[in-house]
Image (cartoon, rainbow, N blue to C red):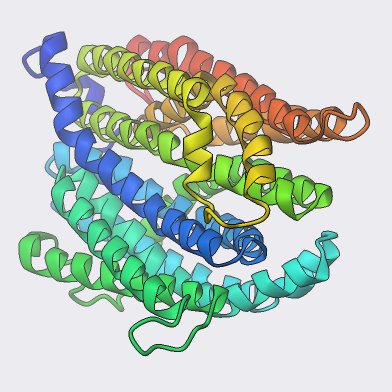
Length: 466
């Protein structure tokens, strides 16, 4: 049985709104925490490099965004695992769970091999993008080491998606927390030269990131082998499965395109902020880190939306799918409002936490950062809406049209507006961030319309593929 005929199945006992809220939070809180912890790896790099040197922080902002663009496209194949495994598990198809997870690992490892040269040649690429030579050199030195972490990082993403689909989210959190602890300890030793280690600055942060990703991968691999032996993910791992590989690829590449379209927009903003100078770029990096932390709340809830929509699809529960979607969207909107309040009321202390008290540039960075936080508050609702709509659409395995919507919204609206407002109209960093907000608003609006007005009615009219 596939998702094309599952809607004919007998629905489960309807869940109340309270049941939905409980299930969403039970599944979602560990996922939210794990996403926050994952972001904390980059956050601790930024915090500790900010204490070390503002120039090093600016270079790491560029380097980490460059790494993340390449990583996020490859993670599309990992994200494809989540709805496919959720649906197969709900339908009792154990072999399908193994097939898609294994082939997703194949795809991400192959992708990592292809992207490694781009990591190692990052200084040249950043130079072409008009970055200051010193910043490009710092980011290049960072990526020459940190680039290797894409192998364990993507492997972890596949296995996390597999475990999340099985609703085993506590181990996902545990593995991520282990990586955070490893990263903090290694940063303290290698950035500053503590505990007898060499003082390596930004390159020390890169080595710490590699070590933390390896630790995370080891924890998750051991767990999968010992606790979910029924799926035999690593048994006869070398055996190809062309059909499953093709299915994961078809569902995954549009997810990668969608993610790159969004992350690319923010990276383009980082490049534009780099044109304004080191201090605006450092302020931008801090504001972006804080926005990313709050965004992880919505990413975790969107993962829940994907898993629960996929399971409802697998069990033929259309009413539960619709009601669950309404509840998870409402929860996400509440978080967005709370975030907006925090960004407007206490931006100064949040930005200042990233900077050494005796840094001569501290005051200048905070002044710019506070204004950018106000701009970030504007797009919290839109950002939450677009990622939640994506989560719901992925749950029903609708990924191609969302990729088109994302590309148009971010690159035909967001990026041009960011440039025009920031430079020809002279608004500087605030203009760049207002352009980001516009792109996110367009994406969020059209993706929500896609789910509620097209995807859901299509499911209710007839079994898919009939």
